[in-house]
Each structure stands twice: as structure tokens, then as C-alpha cells.
Length: 179
Image (cartoon, rainbow, N blue to C red; front, top):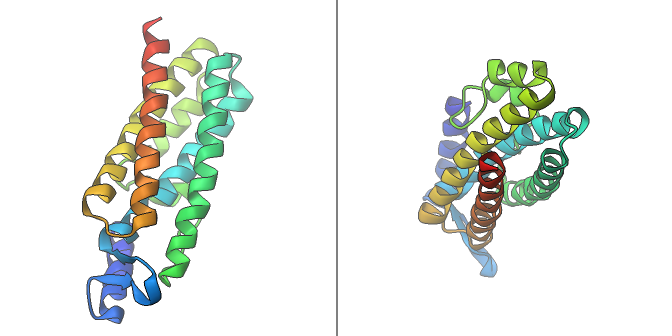
């Protein structure tokens, strides 16, 4: 996935002859950091949605089900927003195959996902919350990088929204785990 991402971004830079895309006719420019953010965050979100759907079916804990539903709904909309940006920059939108990206930084491994699917009861709920926390922290880190290095106004705003919403969920999970 990293090699493919690098090829796409380098191709984008070569085609435009500079380090930004867009920027014409009042459209805010986007740079490599903006494209990388969307190209990596879309598969990251797909994986979050995958485990959230399992949690909504498997868990009997209202907190777990509500967190899973909240995060899945938020990330579905964010995927569409990032896909819109990528299409506007003439970059192919990543597919929905989370299994193909397990080795990407911040992604759960196949083993992680299988362990989660095999767990039951309170063990499942505890493992889901711990796994989701690690996954969301990596998403927050990705968003912070996009805010620091990106140029596209919309992409940076989305990164800020992700930082706030996922930090809120992380705080809720931490409070639940302490109770």
C-alpha cells in the first residue's frame, strides 16, 4: 500500500509539475500531505467501520454499541468527503478492501481483527474498546500530520474535525474503562 500510495502521489506531482494540485479559479491548493491524508485515512476509516459493524451486532453493552454506531456514521460521511477531494484532484479513491491494507501504519492486523471477531461477552467488549482506542489514536496522529503539513482548507478542516471527534470518543472510552 505504501509503495502504491507513493507512486500515486509522485505521479500527481509529476503531472502538475509542482508540489500542489488545484489552486486554479479560486480553488484552494492541495499538496502531497493532503492527498496522502485522504489516501491513508479512507482505508483506515473502512477498517474502523468494519469492526464497528461487528460490535453493533455482537455486543450487548449499550456503551459499546453506541460508540460503534457513532463512529461508523461519522466515518462514513468523512470517507465521502475525502473521496470528493481525491476525485477533484484526479486521484483514484482507494477501494474498500481493508484486508489489503493491514500492513499500513495505524491499521489493525488480520490477527487483531480475527481475535476481535472470536471474542465474546465482556471479553469482546473490553477487546473492542482497547482495539478501537489504538486505532483511533493512530487516526488522530494522521489528522495532526495533515493539519501541520497540508494546504487544502477543506482537508485541514476535516482533519481538525477528526481530531476533535476521535479525541472525544477516546476520552469516553477511557472513562468507561476506569469505571
